[in-house]
Every structure is written in C-alpha cells, then in structure tokens.
Image (cartoon, rainbow, N blue to C red; front, side, top):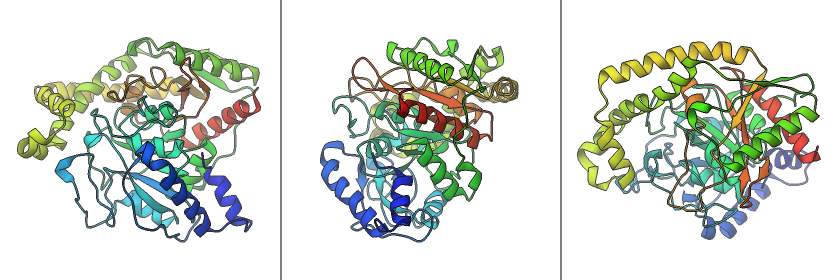
Length: 414
C-alpha cells in the first residue's frame, strides 16, 4: 500500500515531486484496475493541486457529487449523470491540494447489492460494501487515500475486509451535503488509507483541525474497555481471535483491560437503528422508488418494499431510543479511555454476492462516535481480521492517537 505521509515526506525532501507521485498512482491504477475494478470513472490526467496534500491521489465514492466526473450512484438510473458542483468534501480535498483520481465503485445507492469490485487479497472474496471501491483501491496500492460513507458499517467493514486503515469520524465532522442520502440521521463520511498515521494527517488537512494529526499515545496505563456487543450476536473465529490478539498486545504494552458490558439503553439503541434507517431511506429514495422502481437492484428494491411498512410512530420511537442511547454513551465512554470491539463479524465472505454484515458497526454509527480500524492480523483463510477503536463523541484525535500506538506495536511484533 502507498502511505500518504511517506509520499509527502519524499516530496518535502525533494526525493520526488507531486507530479511524480501522481504519475506513480496513475501507473498503479493502470496496472491493477483491470483485476480489481475499483473505479467507476477516472479523469484523463492527474494534475497536482496546491496545499498540504499536493501529490496525493484520492478516490471519491461514487455517491458523492463531482462536477468534472459523473456521479452514477452505482445505478443505471444515474448513469452518466453530471452534477454542476463538487460536494463540499470534494472541495475540501481539492482545497488541501489532493487530486481526485477517480470515482470509486459503490453498491447501488450505498445499499447491499454488490459492486463489481474484487478484494485485492482474494478475487473471489467480498471487498465489503458499500464503500467497496474505496477500500479495494487503497488495499491494492493504487491510491493512498479514499473517501467512503457509512450508514451502517460501510467504511469500517470494507476496510476490515480489505486490510486497510479507516476512520468513521464523529457525526458531521465532515459535511455530507452533496452526498446522496440514505438515512440522514446516520450517514457519515469517512477516510481510508494505509495507516492510522495517514488518516490523522489527511483528516487534519481536510478539516483545518491540526489536532487531528495527533502523535501516538502511550498504551501504558491506558484504560481500554473491551466490549463484545452481545446484542449483536457472536463473532466468527477470525474476529474473536483478532480481539484476543489486541488484548494481548495492549496488556503487554501496559494497558489496563476493562470488561465493558454497556447498558440496556445502548442495546435498545442498537435495535433502533433498523426502523430509523428504514423510515429515512424510503424518504431519501422516494423519487427513485416512485419513478424507477424496476431499475432498482433486487436487494434494494425488496428492502424498500418492506421498509415502507415502517410507521411514523415506529420512527418516533426509534428516534427516542437513539437519544437515550446517545445519553447513555456519555457515561459508557467516560468510564475508560477508549473502547475496543469487533470491526466485522469475521473475514470477508467467500463470495462476491455478499457485502457482509454491519451488525458490529450499526450502534456506533447511530451514536455518532468516532471509530477507527487498522490492519491487525490474518484469519484462518488468510484474509484480514481486525478490531475497531472508539471513543466518545468529538474525541477523534484520541482514537487516532491510540490507533497509532497500536500500529507501532503491531509493526514491532510486540
């Protein structure tokens, strides 16, 4: 994989130039794209911008508006559609000097019908969804940075399946204007890169918040809550082993591991994710359902057929439980420095017909708290398996700092 910080360091020392860095990404895309199919569209040339990310090629998920490339939503309904303006997140990327290397494949309207993208570790395995192209493009070393979105688990899960680092920041840290909505209470933009160190640098540059490029924390003395999410079901052996491996690394580094059960309010909030998303999705896709229902892919069409049965009363109750869950989350996260749990049920499914399951991601998306996953180990099938690190709302820099510390222990083989 390409490290964003390494590229920028080489540019700063004159070892390479922004033009050469982009040319390397273009060559990697040309080499790997036929097998990976990460991109829905690409510009003819990659031209460096001006700013701290000059020379960085970035993939943009194809539900995000771009004025100079089509925004197809992964659907024939929007094939060739050209927005008149860039979404604010794209403007922020360009303002920081990054270059859009292409629109990355998404599942149709960011739901469950698979994208054509292949997992770089195993072409027969799922790359996850819905941000499949973003995760695969980074994992295949084509680009050092990609943008995805998460409504259930669509940043963290594909990153876990493809073995890249990813952050779903605190809700609304990155603007979702110009992003095709699915559930406006849940939709969150996220970043994917080779390492947590790259994520912190990129997030700081895009947002203008220098503190997000946090130095690595010390794990010694850190209180880490270990949360197994019993309300979400049991993990597969690969994810169970990944969490155990994390505990071993953290304990060896001097961290205090705290079993962290959570409250009834959190379990109820987990259950509220479904009806909350269902109601909002029927509104967000009302035009497509009313006018182009037969053009919707089968899983999304069936989902919307069923979701229309959600009542206003059920939606209001889901919102009430969500608020209770967010209130309970403040106490949950205040008891420890960070919380660690499974990033995905297990290794990537051994079929491209599935995008996997977001059951270990949904609660944290609903709570709006920052989540970060970094490559940790390989499972029984040789595919990536990992955990996710979380903290309370607005503590993004702390999650980044702890993830950097974990990376250093993993790379050192501690």
